[in-house]
Image (cartoon, rainbow, N blue to C red):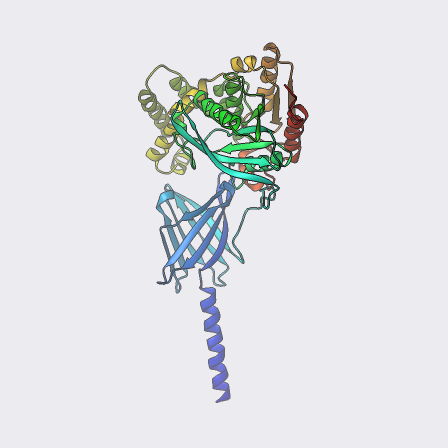
Length: 477
């Protein structure tokens, strides 16, 4: 009788262990390989009160969190696990291992299958971002809004004010291209929040705002030109001038990437801007930037010289259409035709990797055949740089592949000299990328894997320059 009881007990233990290993709930982490790009994908699988499975997905290296999955299913006997995310045109089919520690399967997006293996984690995977500010803060932060009256657009942001009564020197931060929030969030990094925190601690008020169509700001970014965005910047300057805590004679602009185009442009439109800081700002037309940018990034990701040449050939064909005098709709139709022709000429394997060809062509077309991009391709910053008379700080990373230092810094230097501006400082930082992170190659694929948000060297250079030139108490006049 005792032996029978023992056998039953052991069988019960075995069943309990088997059930535990068949549980799909918990935290999972996998790596999705797309060419040379590796993206960490995190899953959290839970169960609702009615027993239904719920999956939430995070793309850690892209900084995209809380992606809702429409359907999740798990069959314990077969250990089959599937989920569907229609908003991403994606599905996943996998098998849970016998020990319950691994899910092996395939991730399908836009018709393309890729292997994706998830491993069980003891806690929710997170990004390590040690520079992201953490309170309590020794300064005040205020949610603010104001209007670009000429465009009828409300602009929302955060104003950071140093402790004390002021008046303080102040800066408005200007984001790079694409729809950015006030922190210029990218792949889990929040560089503008890091800059704002650092400068406010040094006695400089900082205003950072959402781009058009993002957060609390109205408008449509893709239907705006850099010149129109410069008007948004001027509205921000006027808002700062209205604040009693801010010294109206010590307001400057700090622009990153496209913000480095907008800053100088705004400064030539107004006498109320005391200085400009260009972080990876451009010194040549957008078309030239994109040729070199595309080539450098393709090379670092393993492309051959022949492939790079073919890529640039395609860019030239499309940019010629964009620079024509035709209507935007006509340009879109011609870009679609060019892209279809080039896709059809691809080897079958490459063509299949694109997934739904119609969707791919339309997505690529809308990215370039819009008001903002058409303006960017043709815009030459050099005439504006020659008119820039206020003090300028120009910073660039040696390994910046998006706005290459070797291409842009010499032209910025030449323009400032020819324009008669004698108060400028240009610094090229070794080993830093477009985001001013310490990097190995400068490839954008590294941005999310680097824990550093922005090099302390760069923060120090910005803060030291502003404090040295504008940080002293205002004079009597």
